[in-house]
Image (cartoon, rainbow, N blue to C red; front, side, top):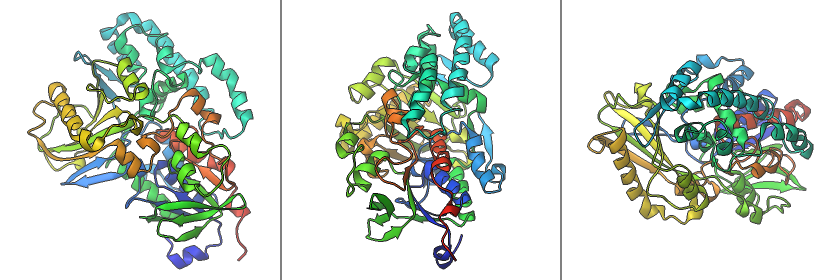
Length: 507
């Protein structure tokens, strides 16, 4: 990495990136590869954003994302730097991707192997085999348009949306995921198994556009992978690429305001009062926070405070990280532990915004693949429960521990018998942490909810509608949340931010 004097003497134009989540790190690499001098400003004491890493008592916990479903998008970043991702990361393909445990104890293994999946369906609901064949064909057709064709295309012009409308009508993108899946499956278990994917990016399967049926094909096409060392290893790899380009990362650098002059972003002011000038600013902060807080001193026409407040935000998450003094070797790496309700539970979370007494859980046991995440003979876990965002009024200061205890009881009754006597370390992440630590409006875990009229052109644009020289990446802009989505949002910058050589200073 350059020293401070050399960095500031660098004649390349300066780009500031606010936030070091996957979107911000990918943006920094792409800008660095296109002639920009880059500084990444991170509020926390380490990189990653939602992919932060907690370490305590010898255990390592990935705070947020746990899987890689489109590794080629990350490989592109290494290629831009003249490197091979395999030299820095050891990715392991998951087979099966994950297990789904239904409330009655039935277990379904989900994998890329079509014959294996057919066998699972034949065991659970053989009458739905013909529907499965039609569904996977539909998922592929949607993927070819909605992801391969549109995910890395800017949608700041209305003409782009209008050009996409015929495909949306043809593919039924105006319908919901759950409604679309219901065309192919009659068995309730399979309707759940093939419709829950929007929850991975903050969407309600009952309202999210059917375009998100593409995730089923994305998983089969590119696989589901785990990075040895956890997602923190991926974050560290990306940081290494930025520093190798001569970029800088500053931690404990919380941005208070994006400075604007004559309608153009000129840099930022940090909470401590420091001003940093820039030729362009890229915000990987939550889009609602960016517009309502970081541009609070700037008059806005579209993303006003009232519009930010009226927008529909994703659900939040309750995450319990815990380590045990023994191994649970019969528990798979990724397990969905489903509860007795599906549609009604989703209504509680998204519509009624009620903290339910039952839940469906995602259980992550990285030590099934990677023993380095815990001391010898121990297991590292995190269990995640979708919950309403802070608009529910839930007092997490009083509700967090009872809710955690209820989850523990559920796990003990289903997949982790004897758990309570084995726990040796524990920590929680609640919607309040998403608001206070990650600066997410309403404590939403995935920013704006991916409904039809909050997708593509209707989403906050990658090219800010309010301020010239300001660009957005991350979960709240196009194409949306999830590691493939936020990394694709950074790829869009290649088409909308000028090459640094066009602005290079004279020596």
